[in-house]
Length: 245
Image 1 (spheres, rainbow, N blue to C red):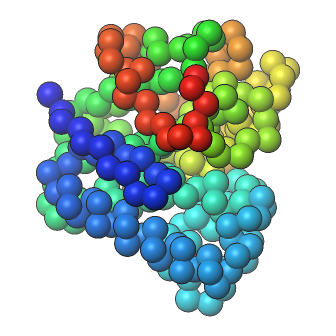
Image 2 (cartoon, rainbow, N blue to C red):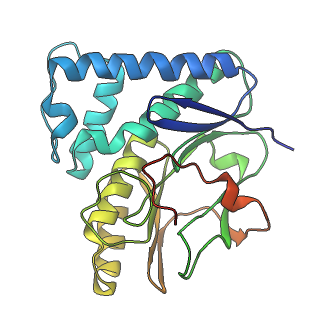
Protein backbone atom coordinates (compact mmCIF):
# COMPACT_ATOMS: atom_id res chain seq x y z
CA UNK A 1 0.00 0.00 0.00
CA UNK A 2 1.48 3.31 -1.08
CA UNK A 3 1.38 6.10 1.47
CA UNK A 4 0.63 9.63 0.24
CA UNK A 5 1.18 12.84 2.10
CA UNK A 6 -0.26 16.26 1.32
CA UNK A 7 1.76 19.42 0.93
CA UNK A 8 0.59 22.92 0.04
CA UNK A 9 2.74 25.83 -1.02
CA UNK A 10 1.16 29.17 -1.88
CA UNK A 11 -1.62 28.35 -4.39
CA UNK A 12 -0.46 24.79 -5.17
CA UNK A 13 -1.64 21.57 -3.52
CA UNK A 14 0.32 18.33 -3.82
CA UNK A 15 -0.09 14.65 -2.99
CA UNK A 16 3.30 12.98 -2.68
CA UNK A 17 4.48 9.40 -2.40
CA UNK A 18 8.23 9.43 -1.76
CA UNK A 19 10.67 8.34 0.90
CA UNK A 20 12.59 11.60 0.47
CA UNK A 21 9.66 13.87 1.24
CA UNK A 22 11.92 16.71 2.40
CA UNK A 23 13.78 16.67 -0.93
CA UNK A 24 10.47 16.88 -2.80
CA UNK A 25 9.08 19.77 -0.78
CA UNK A 26 12.39 21.67 -0.88
CA UNK A 27 12.43 21.35 -4.66
CA UNK A 28 8.86 22.62 -4.94
CA UNK A 29 9.70 25.70 -2.89
CA UNK A 30 12.99 26.25 -4.72
CA UNK A 31 11.53 25.95 -8.22
CA UNK A 32 8.59 28.18 -7.34
CA UNK A 33 11.07 30.79 -6.12
CA UNK A 34 13.14 30.51 -9.30
CA UNK A 35 10.04 30.97 -11.42
CA UNK A 36 8.77 33.94 -9.43
CA UNK A 37 12.15 35.67 -9.70
CA UNK A 38 12.17 35.08 -13.45
CA UNK A 39 8.63 36.42 -13.86
CA UNK A 40 9.64 39.55 -11.98
CA UNK A 41 12.17 40.13 -14.80
CA UNK A 42 9.83 38.95 -17.56
CA UNK A 43 6.15 39.64 -16.65
CA UNK A 44 4.91 38.55 -20.09
CA UNK A 45 6.02 35.01 -19.28
CA UNK A 46 3.17 34.81 -16.79
CA UNK A 47 0.44 36.53 -18.82
CA UNK A 48 1.05 35.45 -22.41
CA UNK A 49 -1.39 32.96 -23.95
CA UNK A 50 1.16 32.20 -26.68
CA UNK A 51 4.80 31.08 -26.64
CA UNK A 52 7.10 33.92 -25.66
CA UNK A 53 10.84 34.36 -26.12
CA UNK A 54 13.07 33.69 -23.13
CA UNK A 55 15.31 36.28 -21.57
CA UNK A 56 19.02 35.50 -21.26
CA UNK A 57 19.97 32.98 -18.55
CA UNK A 58 16.49 31.68 -17.73
CA UNK A 59 16.13 29.11 -14.93
CA UNK A 60 15.62 25.47 -15.88
CA UNK A 61 11.94 25.58 -14.98
CA UNK A 62 11.34 28.45 -17.42
CA UNK A 63 13.25 26.67 -20.19
CA UNK A 64 11.16 23.51 -19.78
CA UNK A 65 7.92 25.47 -19.75
CA UNK A 66 8.99 27.47 -22.80
CA UNK A 67 9.89 24.35 -24.77
CA UNK A 68 6.47 22.85 -24.06
CA UNK A 69 4.77 26.09 -25.08
CA UNK A 70 6.68 26.14 -28.36
CA UNK A 71 5.52 22.60 -29.20
CA UNK A 72 1.86 23.26 -28.39
CA UNK A 73 1.35 26.95 -29.17
CA UNK A 74 -0.03 27.84 -25.72
CA UNK A 75 1.41 30.20 -23.13
CA UNK A 76 4.27 28.88 -20.97
CA UNK A 77 2.29 29.03 -17.74
CA UNK A 78 0.08 26.25 -19.12
CA UNK A 79 2.98 23.92 -18.29
CA UNK A 80 3.78 25.12 -14.77
CA UNK A 81 2.02 22.47 -12.66
CA UNK A 82 3.35 19.50 -14.61
CA UNK A 83 6.85 20.97 -14.72
CA UNK A 84 7.01 21.44 -10.96
CA UNK A 85 5.60 17.94 -10.37
CA UNK A 86 8.32 16.36 -12.50
CA UNK A 87 11.16 18.46 -11.09
CA UNK A 88 10.03 17.64 -7.55
CA UNK A 89 9.92 13.92 -8.37
CA UNK A 90 13.35 14.11 -9.97
CA UNK A 91 14.72 15.54 -6.71
CA UNK A 92 13.59 12.39 -4.88
CA UNK A 93 15.04 10.15 -7.59
CA UNK A 94 18.39 11.92 -7.18
CA UNK A 95 18.21 11.01 -3.49
CA UNK A 96 17.98 7.35 -4.46
CA UNK A 97 14.22 6.82 -4.16
CA UNK A 98 12.91 4.00 -6.33
CA UNK A 99 9.21 4.87 -5.94
CA UNK A 100 8.06 8.44 -6.47
CA UNK A 101 4.67 9.90 -7.35
CA UNK A 102 4.00 13.63 -7.27
CA UNK A 103 0.54 14.96 -8.10
CA UNK A 104 0.05 18.69 -8.47
CA UNK A 105 -3.59 19.68 -8.95
CA UNK A 106 -4.39 16.90 -11.42
CA UNK A 107 -0.96 16.70 -13.03
CA UNK A 108 0.93 13.54 -12.07
CA UNK A 109 4.50 12.37 -12.56
CA UNK A 110 5.19 8.72 -11.69
CA UNK A 111 8.33 6.62 -11.36
CA UNK A 112 7.48 3.26 -9.75
CA UNK A 113 8.69 -0.34 -9.88
CA UNK A 114 5.15 -1.75 -9.67
CA UNK A 115 1.93 -0.94 -11.52
CA UNK A 116 0.37 2.34 -10.40
CA UNK A 117 -3.32 3.24 -10.71
CA UNK A 118 -4.14 6.82 -11.66
CA UNK A 119 -7.81 7.63 -11.21
CA UNK A 120 -9.66 9.81 -13.71
CA UNK A 121 -11.96 12.50 -12.32
CA UNK A 122 -14.22 14.27 -14.81
CA UNK A 123 -16.66 15.81 -12.34
CA UNK A 124 -20.17 14.67 -11.67
CA UNK A 125 -22.81 13.81 -14.25
CA UNK A 126 -20.74 12.71 -17.25
CA UNK A 127 -19.62 9.51 -18.90
CA UNK A 128 -16.48 8.99 -16.81
CA UNK A 129 -17.10 10.54 -13.39
CA UNK A 130 -14.84 8.61 -11.01
CA UNK A 131 -15.32 5.22 -12.65
CA UNK A 132 -12.08 4.73 -14.61
CA UNK A 133 -8.36 4.66 -13.91
CA UNK A 134 -5.16 4.16 -15.88
CA UNK A 135 -3.17 1.10 -14.79
CA UNK A 136 0.36 2.28 -15.56
CA UNK A 137 2.80 -0.67 -15.88
CA UNK A 138 6.33 -0.22 -14.52
CA UNK A 139 7.85 -0.57 -17.97
CA UNK A 140 6.06 2.64 -19.06
CA UNK A 141 7.50 4.74 -16.24
CA UNK A 142 8.71 7.36 -15.59
CA UNK A 143 5.58 8.89 -17.07
CA UNK A 144 3.46 12.01 -16.83
CA UNK A 145 -0.35 12.04 -16.85
CA UNK A 146 -1.69 15.60 -16.92
CA UNK A 147 -5.26 16.87 -17.12
CA UNK A 148 -7.14 20.04 -17.93
CA UNK A 149 -10.83 20.86 -17.56
CA UNK A 150 -13.22 23.71 -18.16
CA UNK A 151 -15.30 22.40 -15.25
CA UNK A 152 -12.75 22.07 -12.46
CA UNK A 153 -9.86 24.08 -11.09
CA UNK A 154 -8.97 27.75 -11.35
CA UNK A 155 -6.76 27.67 -14.47
CA UNK A 156 -7.92 29.59 -17.54
CA UNK A 157 -9.64 27.44 -20.16
CA UNK A 158 -10.75 28.72 -23.56
CA UNK A 159 -12.81 25.61 -24.34
CA UNK A 160 -15.77 23.71 -22.93
CA UNK A 161 -14.31 20.30 -22.13
CA UNK A 162 -15.08 18.07 -19.17
CA UNK A 163 -11.67 16.43 -19.13
CA UNK A 164 -8.58 16.32 -21.32
CA UNK A 165 -5.89 13.94 -20.06
CA UNK A 166 -2.57 13.69 -21.88
CA UNK A 167 0.06 11.00 -21.37
CA UNK A 168 3.71 11.76 -22.19
CA UNK A 169 7.17 11.13 -20.85
CA UNK A 170 7.65 14.84 -20.24
CA UNK A 171 5.27 16.48 -17.77
CA UNK A 172 5.80 19.98 -19.14
CA UNK A 173 4.62 18.82 -22.55
CA UNK A 174 1.76 16.74 -21.11
CA UNK A 175 0.48 19.71 -19.11
CA UNK A 176 0.67 22.17 -22.01
CA UNK A 177 -0.91 19.67 -24.43
CA UNK A 178 -3.79 19.01 -22.01
CA UNK A 179 -4.47 22.75 -21.89
CA UNK A 180 -4.47 22.93 -25.69
CA UNK A 181 -6.82 19.93 -25.93
CA UNK A 182 -9.24 21.54 -23.52
CA UNK A 183 -9.06 24.86 -25.39
CA UNK A 184 -9.83 23.18 -28.73
CA UNK A 185 -12.86 21.27 -27.47
CA UNK A 186 -15.98 23.44 -27.44
CA UNK A 187 -18.59 21.09 -28.94
CA UNK A 188 -18.96 17.37 -29.57
CA UNK A 189 -17.93 18.01 -33.18
CA UNK A 190 -14.47 19.10 -31.99
CA UNK A 191 -13.56 15.80 -30.34
CA UNK A 192 -12.11 13.93 -33.34
CA UNK A 193 -10.09 16.88 -34.61
CA UNK A 194 -8.70 17.53 -31.13
CA UNK A 195 -7.65 13.90 -30.71
CA UNK A 196 -5.78 14.05 -34.02
CA UNK A 197 -4.19 17.42 -33.27
CA UNK A 198 -2.86 16.50 -29.84
CA UNK A 199 -1.55 13.04 -30.67
CA UNK A 200 0.24 14.58 -33.64
CA UNK A 201 2.47 16.62 -31.32
CA UNK A 202 5.95 15.05 -31.05
CA UNK A 203 6.43 13.52 -27.61
CA UNK A 204 2.73 13.03 -26.81
CA UNK A 205 1.87 9.37 -26.20
CA UNK A 206 -1.91 9.68 -26.11
CA UNK A 207 -5.03 11.61 -25.14
CA UNK A 208 -8.26 10.78 -23.34
CA UNK A 209 -10.96 13.39 -23.97
CA UNK A 210 -14.36 13.68 -22.28
CA UNK A 211 -17.05 16.00 -23.62
CA UNK A 212 -20.46 15.30 -22.11
CA UNK A 213 -21.32 11.67 -22.87
CA UNK A 214 -18.61 11.40 -25.53
CA UNK A 215 -15.29 9.80 -24.57
CA UNK A 216 -12.50 9.88 -27.12
CA UNK A 217 -9.22 7.94 -26.98
CA UNK A 218 -6.21 8.31 -29.23
CA UNK A 219 -2.57 7.27 -29.25
CA UNK A 220 -0.78 4.93 -26.87
CA UNK A 221 -2.47 5.10 -23.47
CA UNK A 222 -2.00 2.91 -20.38
CA UNK A 223 -4.71 0.24 -19.95
CA UNK A 224 -8.03 1.58 -18.65
CA UNK A 225 -9.51 -0.28 -15.70
CA UNK A 226 -12.51 0.19 -13.44
CA UNK A 227 -11.69 2.37 -10.46
CA UNK A 228 -12.53 0.52 -7.26
CA UNK A 229 -11.37 3.19 -4.84
CA UNK A 230 -14.35 4.37 -2.74
CA UNK A 231 -12.27 7.31 -1.51
CA UNK A 232 -11.24 8.60 -4.95
CA UNK A 233 -13.47 11.69 -4.75
CA UNK A 234 -11.76 12.66 -1.49
CA UNK A 235 -8.32 12.38 -3.09
CA UNK A 236 -8.96 14.98 -5.78
CA UNK A 237 -6.74 17.95 -4.96
CA UNK A 238 -8.56 21.26 -4.81
CA UNK A 239 -8.07 24.73 -3.49
CA UNK A 240 -10.46 27.49 -2.51
CA UNK A 241 -10.85 28.64 -6.12
CA UNK A 242 -11.79 25.24 -7.50
CA UNK A 243 -15.20 24.37 -8.84
CA UNK A 244 -16.86 21.92 -6.44
CA UNK A 245 -17.36 19.45 -9.29
